Length: 235
Image (tube, rainbow, N blue to C red; front, side, top):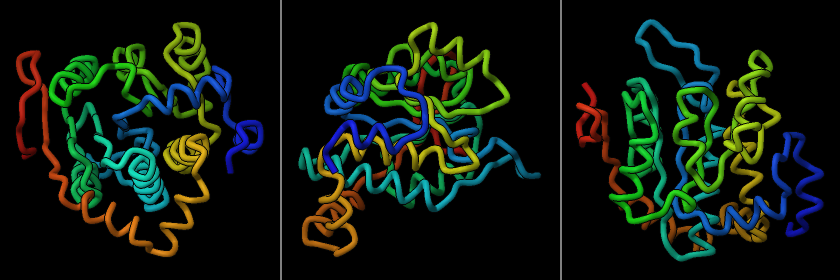
C-alpha cells in the first residue's frame, strides 16, 4: 500500500493540506503526542472523573510505533497530554510503554516546550492528535496536526483551519475510533503499511525485537506547577 492517491481515496476525513504534503511532514516526525478526552473517547466522565479508551485505538498506537521502528530502528517518543487527571490514561500509557503522560496541563504549549527540551526534538518533529480549544496553543506549533472531528463545533473547526493549526480532520469522532483513523492514515502514508501489518500478524523476529525494546521504555508522569512542568506521580 504505497499509492498516496489510493490512500487519500480511502479516508473520508478532510485533508487541509494535500496528502503528499502530509506524508512529507510525517516522515520528519520523531514524537507522537495524543490528547486524551475527546480523542481516545467522547469526553464523558464517570463518577471517578475518568474517561475510558478502546482497544481498537490502543492497537493503532502500537502499529504506528512499530511502523516507525521499522523505518528508523528506534522506538519513537510517545506521550499522552491531558488537562485532567485520568487514571485510564495512566493505565494505557504504562501498559503500552508510552514514555510520558502529561496531566493537569491547562496551557499545553509549555508541555510541548518541555518535550522538545527534554528529548531534544524540534516542534516540527512532533505530531499531535487533538480535539479542542485547550489544545490550540500546542497545535499551532507542532509539525503535524490531526484534529478529531465533532459535528457539534463547526465554528471551532473552522477557526483551527483558518489559523493554520490543522492538517487533517478525522471523519470519526472520539467515540468512534478517531485515533485509529489518524494512525491508520499515517501508517499508510509511510509507504510500508503492508510490511507493518504482515510482520505484526506473523510475530516476526522484527516485531519481537521491537516489542522487547518497547517494553523497556519507562512511563514518566509530569504535571504543571507554578507555570513549569515537573515530574510527579498522580495521586
